Amino acid sequence: MLIIQHKKTIDLIKDLAEKHGRQRNALIPILQDIRDKCGQISDFAMQAVAEELKIEPTEVYGVATFYAFLGVQPRGRYVIRLCRTLSCDMAGKDDVARQLENDLGITFGETTKDGLFTLEWANCMGVCDQGPALLVNEDLYTQVTPEKVGEILDSLRCPA
Amino acid sequence: MAIIKESIRNQITFSQIPFGEGLKKGVQLTPEELIKVVRDSNIRGRGGAGFPTGMKWSFTAAAKGDKKYVVCNADEGEPGTFKDRVIFSNWAKLVFEGMALAGYAIGADEGIIYLRGEYTFLRNQLEKELEEERAAGLLGQNVAGKEGFSFDIHVHMGSGAYVCGEETALLEALEGHRGEARNRPPFPATCGYLGKPTVVNNVETFAWIASILVKGADWFKGLGTEKSAGLKLFSVSGDVERPGVYEFPFGITVEQLLKEVGGEGAKAVQIGGASGHCVPASNFSRAIAYEDVATGGSIMVIGPQRSMLDVLENFMEFFADESCGQCVPCRIGNSKLLEGVRMLQEGECTSKYLNELCKLAETMQIASKCGLGQSSPTAFLDIVKYFRRELFSGQAF
Image (cartoon, rainbow over all chains, first blue to last red; front, side, top):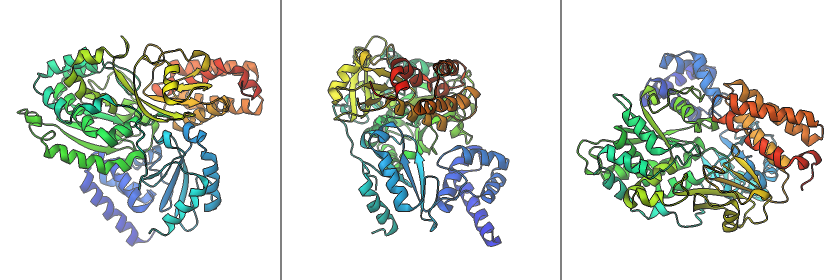
């Protein structure tokens, strides 16, 4: 990583520590913001957070890897999470999953080469009466059908 | 962007109480009198575990501490439950009032809503409504005109972990740690958030408090059954004509419920989410209540065309993924059960091995550290008990 990027990361983390505080209970809000702003929680960012909060980097790593919505892997700009739990499963999530894989050319757990989309499974998202459901970042889509998949992806590629 | 229909299917009783009325009435009482009303109503925790709310409040009120907290458990992650999302979308202010009343009862000035990451789309609306409550004098200084009573609420976002619905794991997450359940005792009532006495209640529990104050403890106690007082919200999904959120009194039978939601002809109903009980058609006369089949509100209806083996695989995949990994019975046990389900799917499981898996499941119920591992084998044992023939033959009966 270039030194200038290191500097940017450190500045961002200092700003976030000002916003959320430097107590231990600020750790997860800080990591959430890093994820939202950088798309990833890098090794360097974790060390910088540890330094700022005066805790061990392993503690930060332990927390970042525990939660499904944090995670240390690079993700695309849009993270698509398809619910795989029973009600969405019975509503036909397998067909939606296949169409997502076909249209994106990746399998679950992967990111498209252009860095735009990451495809992941999610456990129950609390819209069981309107499945199959998927989240694109924070936005929820309900009653998704395979034929709607292309439409959704197009709307993300070229926002109106 | 979120496109959600609010499928509220019948009258939700607590929604008839005007915002603010319960809170204004509650702060006229002394904290002791308020706790007495809640205790007399016999309301039990609506998240699923069913601990008496009045008792929880009185323990926390009695606990010594310079600072106390009220935490709203909005980490609604149990498969098949979505009522808390609907409550927040429509009647969030009733939840805030319930939290403020809990704060008044136990002597806390700070409330925290732990909202699951999947519900981030609700956050702006909640923040806006909190602002409106402050402007209306129902949060902040001298709440509802009560001299000297301050209470405010902030929202803390979760980050995607089912186990954080367990209250001590939730507190760990709030404190910035991995969401791993704590040993109990001490209970949160004496040693909760940041080591301070803390009340943790479900969204729906808080939502009912205002109407209990307005309509009286006896009104609530008179509904439902003797051991499961009151009305309950149910999240109904799966093979039914009318999925959505319903209110029913506790004690309703599975059969009556299926008729209301258009799920007659079901082969089984999963009650209480993946961690709950699987009730086969032969047992549809059983009642939904803490003393019979308990639930936090999740009702997943399984139609006759479904394979119970697929249902079981879905649940075990869920638990193998969501086990936090802290204790061995849950971490290894759920993976072994999933492996067993896959063997059954391949037609390669011996009867002896299936019996051994059942013993493992029973061990998990006893030896796991928290509710996740203790309850994750329940559906496995139920499905093996009631659908053994189907599991071995791979054909629906």
